[in-house]
Every structure is written in C-alpha cells, then in structure tokens.
Image (tube, rainbow, N blue to C red; front, side):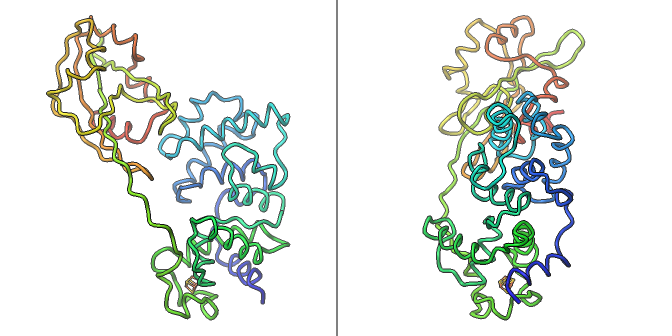
Length: 356
Ligand code: SF4
C-alpha cells in the first residue's frame, strides 16, 4: 500500500478529535492555523472558541477594533499574528469585497500567511494537493528518509518540499496534511518517538540505521539576546481609596506592539534603584517636582521569548496624588478594573497577579 494510504488509514483510527476538524470553512481553517502557529493544540483550543465566537466571519473580524482582537489574543504570545490577522481581514473586505482567497497562490498574498498556512488552508478547504510542512512534518520526513539536509536551510527546505510533494495524497490532501501533523505530534515525537509501535518502522531509514536521535538536522541556534526592561508602577490612591496608576501603549516596531504596559525604561544593564533619578526619562517625568516614594525593592521576572530573554524589574513608586496629574501628559491613568480590559503581555499580567 502507498505511503499516503497507510498514513490515512492510521489517521482514521488514531487521529485526534479536534473542534476545528468538524468544518472545512476556509475562514475557520485560516483562524485555526494562525492560532496554532507556535502554539500547542490544547492551549490553542480555548482561543479557537473565543475567536470564532467573537468573530464568526471575516466581516466581523475586520469590523472589530484592533484592541479587542489583541485582548482576545492575550496570553497566546506572538502578537504580530493577531495584528496581521486583523489587517488581513480588513484587506479582504476592502480589496476582495469580503471574498476569501480560493487557492494556495492567492492565500500566499494574504498578510501573515506563509507557505505552511496557505498549504493547510487550500488543501483542507479546497482539496488542493499541496503539502503543508511544519516542524512535525520536517521531523517525520527527515527520519523516514534519513535526510541529511538542515530543515532550516534554503537548500534543505527545497529537498523536503520535493519529498513531501511526492507523498501528498491527491484525493485527500487535507486529510494527508492533518495526518502528518498528528503522526508527528503523537508517534514520531521530538523526544522518545514510539518507534516500536510505528506503522513505518520496517522502512524508516533512521530507525533501521538506529539513528533516530540524529534527525532532523538543524542549524546551530543563535543565542537569545538579553534585554533589561524596567517597569514603573506609578500609583496613588483616589478619594475612594482605589489604586490608580499609569500605563502606555507600545508603539515601536518591537515585541508587543499596540499592547498596553506600565511606563518603561529599557537599559543596557541591570538598573539599580539608587541611580533612577539620574536617568533622563526620570528627570523628564519628575521635572514638575512631583514627590515619590519607592515602595520596596523591585520585583524581578525573567521572561523567555524565542529570540530574546527579558530581564524585567518592576518598581512600585507611590506618587503624591495632587501632583500625579502631571503624569497624564505622558501616560494614561487607569484603575485595575479598566486595565483588565486592555490587551497586555503575559509579563505584565504576571506582575499584576503578584501585586493584587
Ligand atoms: Fe518516526 Fe520511529 Fe516511526 Fe521512524 S520508526 S517514522 S523515527 S516513529
């Protein structure tokens, strides 16, 4: 039996039952594939329900304010996915009259959609015979055929694409792509693959050569860059005794663009509280003579992103209420209830949880 037929038979008996597999609606497949990029299936599930309930079609997604989209995305990370999804929905409404793309090439032109996502959508929703290659699929192919090419080099990618194109099932390409993903996630796993139970263990070259651990080959990883973020929880109590504090929206082309966070000073190294008042940003904020008291030592969090490690220090700074109003020329004044509704990073959430 051909490889794809055996794989599809395995999938029919062992494939995961996932809510998005109940439909072939290209809009739903698109949303799902974007959510699942860099995200574990079970973590993505909650977001899938949230998103499809709030935005059941491309028109509702395009009509929503970006902040609402980011707020629903909160906690999932890689926020550029949400920004691109939202912009793409607006582009589809404006440039295509709300009509979704109908094939691989057209999907490739959509903001935030790369070859993998375009292949997944067009194969599942339109039965176009294109193979979708993600980390799972690279690993399975590398092991099955003992492919001595790096999966993240351009030459390697070409080789893997050619092998996958040979294997994809022409009748059920969507099923084939989903089966490959499930097979990679549950049998040919990154660590401790289930080779003894594997239906391909009689022909898998890596297994026969006892070299499963060698594949897939990858380029050496770049070391993550360390950044020092110093956040300031500038707070005072209003007449009702409620804590009020200041936030700002990130605008630069950087991580967490458009999310809200506490006032921030980024420094080259760890910032000691005793040199705070020497910083130009600090001098500017306190130019009008507002009094402050540093409330305890800063709280420290180490936050790992794919290519960056954030060393975050949160300083609690109590302000004199009468003068704190000068801060509204730099920042937004909120209370915890209002801030709860604004989109923010997981790091900011961690701090809030700690102090509340
Ligand atoms: Fe993967 Fe092992 Fe099966 Fe080969 S035999 S495809 S390494 S699970």
